[in-house]
Length: 491
Image 1 (cartoon, rainbow, N blue to C red):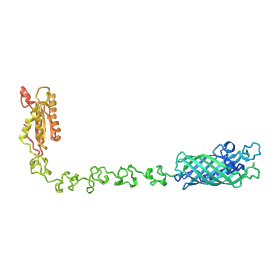
Image 2: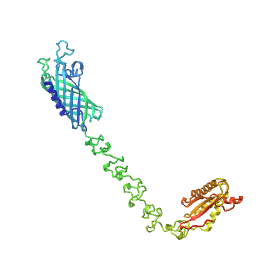
Image 3: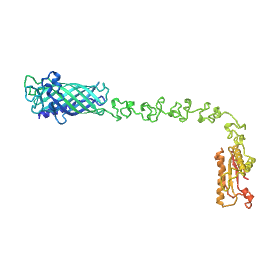
Image 4: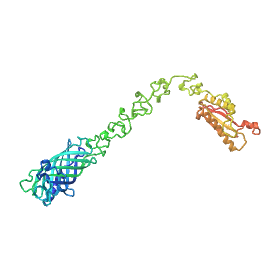
């Protein structure tokens, strides 16, 4: 029971304090493992101190007392500047006690005899200060250290204090888990006397070696970003190591706290805000974010430099007064209608028709004549390109229509009565559409020209004769209105 009380006392002291090479991030370290006690250090004899104490330091089978179970527990805390303080409790059973007696039977060549003092229980509680050389050697895995401390040892019915210099080497598998190897020379204040009975353990000095697993813990990482709060400039928001734990949501290299646009990738010069058009004005402040502009116009362009932004300038590429909507007061076609008010600025026309030319009966007749010369391949809606007159007529129609950019036209397709009605209707529609498509391809606005097929329903001659049927197979371009709403009777 007395030994159990001592063990419990040691365990309580261990849990109250500290152990191995921890750091400022994880200030606490818990270690446990096995220990070995070697009493040869106090046996005397030897040629010199090193011979007596160190020459057989690793004679495990003859000198070391090892309890085949977890036999030590330690706890330590970093105090900064590579120093830590700790306490360690250990338990062992002494069944190998080394005595120097060259006259005794069974002594080895150096005069030492190994005896069994009666399986004495061994308990130790030790406190220490340790210095780690890990940062000095700039290693992340190898951690050599020196320690100095004191402790109290119970050996059988005896107990005594010790001074404990020691050294250790820890191999860190991860930041938090390592293998710790340590040796401590426990110098007894009493020690056994060479003048007394050397076979009777009293308060012997001895070496204690330990090997165990060490766990570092205690670091606080509130936001779970892998950066400890003490090093985290943004401890409550997960962030990146290169920004001291602060987030950069948009990945533009500017932390959210300094980023005026934290969710949009941006430029440092604009406090992290994007500038799609590259005009030096952040999109959030740019009234025209997709087009480069001037700061004076909130990022909008003024291409002609007349003081009106392009979006408010009726003539954005030609300078003009604001009173004229940014357009110059010009009349390119010299028709008396200013270009600003002229729907056909390069084709002369009266003001009554908004500057566009008026379609006359003469023009309508020209179109009717030219359209009837258009020639198609037999039974098809494709042009007979081998027919020179047909080609010339198509070119003439394009020229006439371009002179009347606001006029509305209808291309009509007609057939003779030969063949089925449905076939003729379809053919007339397709031929009219073919003419429209050609006109649109050559610059006539699609909204100004339509097509319609009439089949054989509107003959201009008798279908009983070959000549009549040839006249009925025709295409016509009909004027159907203009900007003034004028209609022309179709003949």
